[in-house]
Image 1 (tube, rainbow over the protein chains, first blue to last red):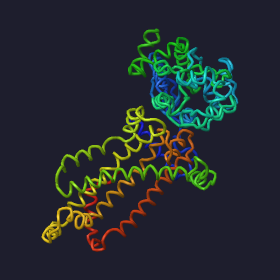
Image 2 (image 1 turned 90 degrees about the vertical axis):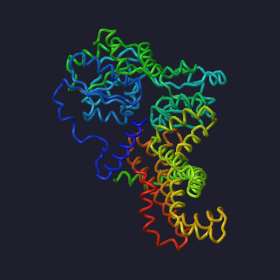
Image 3 (image 1 turned 120 degrees about the horizontal axis):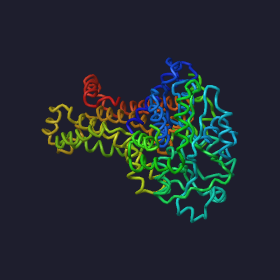
Image 4 (image 1 turned 60 degrees about the horizontal axis):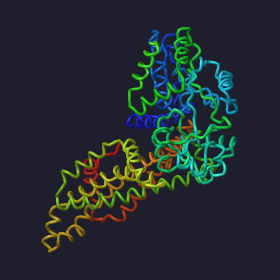
Amino acid sequence: MMKKKLAFGVAIAAALVLSACSSGNPLGSTSPNPSGASATSITVGSANFPENELLADIYAGALTAKGVTVTKKLNIASRETYVPALKNGEIDLIPEYTGAFSKYLNPDADISTEAAALASLKAALPDTLTALEPASAQDKDSITVTRATATQYNLTTIDDLVPVAKDLVLGGPPEWKNRSYGVPGLKKTYGLSFKDFKALDTAGPLTVQALKNGQVQAANLFTTDPAIKANDFVSLTDTKSFFGAQNVIPVLTKTKATPEVTAALNAVSAKLDTDTLATLVTKVVVDKQDAATVASDWLKANGLS
Amino acid sequence: MSFVWEWLTNPAYWQGSDGIWVRLAEHLGYAAITLVVAAAIGIPLGLWIGHTGRGRLAVVNLANGVRSVPTLGLLFVAVLVLGPLLAGDIAFLVPAIFVLVVLAVPPILAGAYAGIESVDPSARDAARGMGMSSWQVLWRVEVPCALPLIFSGLRSSTLQVIATATLTASISLGGLGRFLIDGQAYRDYGQMAGGAVLVAALAMAVDLVFAVVQRIAVSPGLVPVRTSRRSARTRLVPNPA
């Protein structure tokens, strides 16, 4: 919490101070990593939720085992913050999800199948970045309701929400409000109009609690979230593939994609399926084990380090 | 700087249910509720401590200890603990106000007891000598003389609360913090910095109002004391920063 507060404070302070000069990118560093020439040093970043940090730890562990010098910059923020950092070389590698990242880069991307999502991602990636092999593991966004709500309105798919959504409040991360990937997209694809949208956290404890206590009746949670099973929540089937295919995939700066780096990361993808990922996430989120330890144990057990 | 100006001067951002006017009103609302509750706790307690000299060590140390608790951390703990006990949006509002009150009480309390303590003992003796009861001494002599410091505690607390009420947006509530949180989520620096400018402007405007009220409420006879009050304030009501 302290860390979050500090990061928040720093972000605001930086925004304030730097907005005084007319730089177009107040939070970004002005020059790319000066030591960028060395291909054997990689800065791994992650988004600000536990699974993504865990994946970054797994990548970092697999690379370290192959003699690559790894620096970790985890828990950065949402795509709006870390993608520019990836483009300007502040970070070199990030665990991504094929569908969500494609939609971020190109709101019209086709992500209805795993192959389509991968093709869309490769087409939409900036020239400086490359996507390696995707894992079979998928972590999808979902619209999740409580068992009681599902029973009351007879809900199994997102379509079932359409006639009753006007009485329900949707909860999700703040950026969902205006993102094509959030509220506007749900309206366009499903014709869903909720009574209200509440900006909570990114599928974290605040969202789980708000859903459990009824401040929101539908919420965005990740399909690998242990809280879904623990609270007997129901994730509604996404019949129109709005959230699409979401395979875990390493996205890397092209200049850092040496054969040894590529081989190490593809080996991780080959071993990672959804069940494995859900189990590892449960160890971190529910059992409160250290993510780096969970990552290194899994890598050892699978002969990757 | 231009994008901040563009954001602030675009009339579209001022209107509607999530426009700047509504957020300003929400922000003032949170701050007002907080200050009323905090003053209702801090001023009577401070007057009692100052007047009787009792409980000073315990209460003052406790209040100062509470000040070191990180507000954002406390906010999330409060939501997770108090939230399940409450229904509807109150489940977010009550924890938010609770956390802000925790932040707001210490400066108000310090202002009140320091104000009473700083009253010239000879004035107090004279009042007793005239036959005033303990209650009359408090209301007719001590409180009027303590007003400058009571006001300074209130003003210091108000500034802190207006700045910190931005955090309520992180638990889905409104207020000017929405622009900071949402601006960060969208990487919209115009909105983020614009929101911060509005918070600062609001804090200054409210402080100005307090300054005017203080000028009217405080006896002109106390004005020459102002220089010593300044030094007393910096000593007894530490700057929130």
